[in-house]
Image (cartoon, rainbow, N blue to C red; front, top):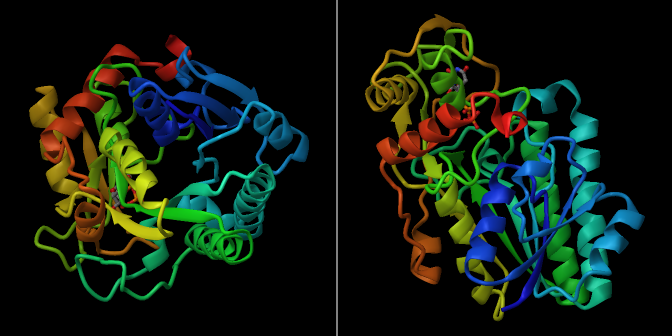
Length: 329
Ligand code: UDP
């Protein structure tokens, strides 16, 4: 048993990772300002310190509840579109968060750090699937902010000997298979919750952003990975940090088009997804699919829910049970 600091532990991927840590008997302190996350998403077994990662007093209050075996840093602004309206805020806040937390960790003698990074590091990739050797050329301020976070951690390693794992998520989706947590963003911009919401009549019909891409059915292809499998990847990365820092691309390795996702939602839910077609969304690459070979080979990680049906089924169950998200709990 060990104790972990999870920043952003009230958010989507963070809260599922808190569950994974508690399930295996670890102790968890969550640092979250609840600006995007939800108090109800923090499991009862975890301790919540409410505050921002770039607020030294909040970070100090969190570290006072240590010592921590490792920090898992999820807290960040994470919307690509938003980042192109306010790039300085994205870069400023995301870099300030990681540097404040990693700096405090080094001071406290905690030398393991796991960073939520992103496929957005690769911008418009040259080839699919995307492995760790591909060119890093973010096409958004969000992607750039995470690249800068990774680079900052490389300096924490050089100077303070802090090891880090940067996990570049592809499309996180689904919900806890036992129904304990789910996806609740405001505003919601992600395909699967919007499609389920439309099918359930909780949201307006979905707009498919472009059907003239150079893909088999003309809609964008993404690699959807179950949030519980993402959480598990964090636990798998921790032992590697005994030896070295790592960067892993994290996806299922299979791409699905927007149309295939809508078909799957309709099949799983037993009702159609009301939708129409609109123009492309700025900054959307035609296809993003991960090669997670390195992660699998080096950590033994294997997704438990690789099938899109299972991802959608768990998401559907959570949204059907929580039509107002965490507010309804
Ligand atoms: N998408 C769409 N309509 C929507 C939301 C998303 O067609 O209302 C498409 C989007 O263009 C992308 C895919 O669904 O190709 C996944 O988008 P999402 O925002 O879920 O994740 P992203 O790939 O941007 O991280």
